[in-house]
Amino acid sequence: MSTTIRPELSQKNRYWIEKHRYYELKHFCLQYPKWEKLVAAIDGFAKQPEGGIIFSSGSTGDPTERAAEAREYYVRLMGMVEQAAAETDLVIGPAIFKAVTNGMSYDILKARIDIPCCKDTYYDLYRKFFWVLSKIRK
Image (cartoon, rainbow, N blue to C red; front, side, top):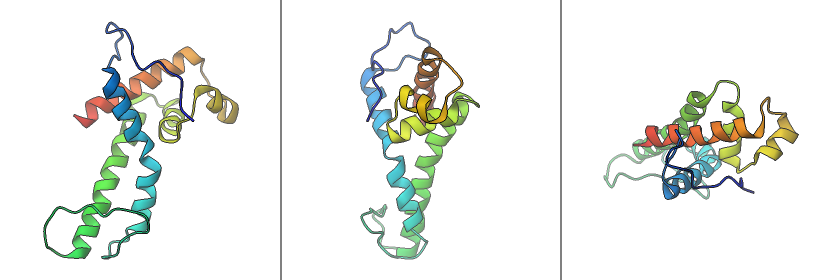
């Protein structure tokens, strides 16, 4: 399930980003649950996690080192999403984090965790999240 937010905003909006950049960031965030599973599966030893991909730098070095590099890579990606949510808002940030990583809409979040703001405020912060994430990912 995904949100029904309009991908295109007026360029006068303070959190404007290009439509395709928004989609890129949205799909980036939706990978978060997979990254979590990969990080949990990579324990620092040279083994391939089930259903996962080990990041390879192309070197023929130590397989355990490559596993550690892969884990660090996914942790860094996860950190970007977490940092953007934290910078967006201290109160609504956790709800936005849940929404962008699980494809949840405002209505679902309101029903499940009773977000303490109106829909307009939420979506303004939602757009701010992607604007912040865009800056972090540059």
